[in-house]
Image (cartoon, rainbow, N blue to C red; front, side):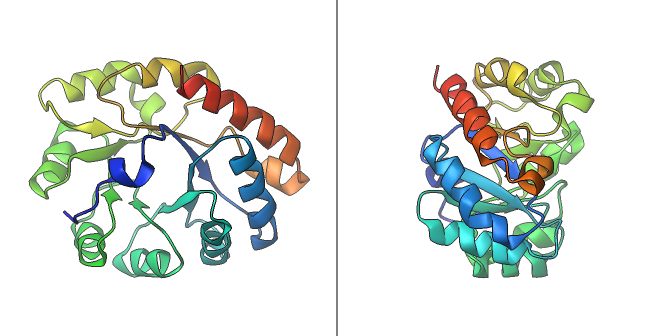
Length: 210
């Protein structure tokens, strides 16, 4: 892959807030709330028209390592990195996205749901994958079943995970970090409820460090 791994980019952070931000105007106060709560990284999904502006604003904040999620094409990967993304996450495995991220020198974390997809990722030279959608696939039981034949693979489970499941995932040695959206939902952002974002994120950060 590239010379930089997701592990080194996250620098030990094991909680990855996954953010679908409806308006670039909320990017700065959201970054403030996350950083004040102890979060050190975040994934901005490319699901909204203003995602690039959001990513750029949050990357400029300085208190967070910011990556791009829901990246489906090489062109999106290029735009994300130009906007300041330090890593790229996809919901599935795509050879062209992986190749573009290697060319750009950023870690890429493709989503996998089966052993076949995991083998494709490993063949592409990756050692970290996103288990997605984790809870719908069977959660920790599925993660452990997939990890057993592939020692050394690291997982970033995402999808349907909430605060009550965080500690259980993080206790598994194969889990590098856990992604989740419960800390800063679109509803929180539409309401401007940054106090609740701070509370939920601080609680999650505390759980991720125990």
